[in-house]
Image 1 (cartoon, helix red, strand yellow):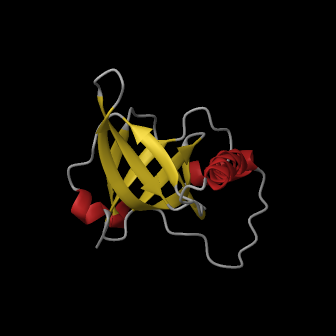
Image 2 (image 1 turned 90 degrees about the horizontal axis):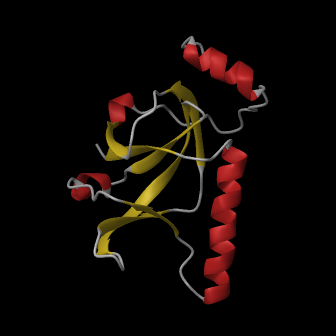
Length: 143
């Protein structure tokens, strides 16, 4: 069973906005002739990379709820220009909507066991609830 990561999408107001960020990065990569991979830079490098790269995803917390995930394709530690160790999390650009799951704020990323991860939204399910109602239902554990 793969291990996942979970992280706050700081400054992101919606899944639509996150999709826009990813699309913008993909357009830039395409113009530069680079592989179409979404890369997120983080301070700490996961030590359990073998488990994560065996099918794990990065689950994004947006506005207090896990809402979407991206499959993790690579973990690449590096040292920045200031000599600080950092890590590139290489992600599939495709965002997969999940059931909403409330999550309190935290710093950095955390490991997320498969048993604790929210399930993906079922294919074909129309998801047209207003975000405020969806958040309230998630908080109550009803959706």
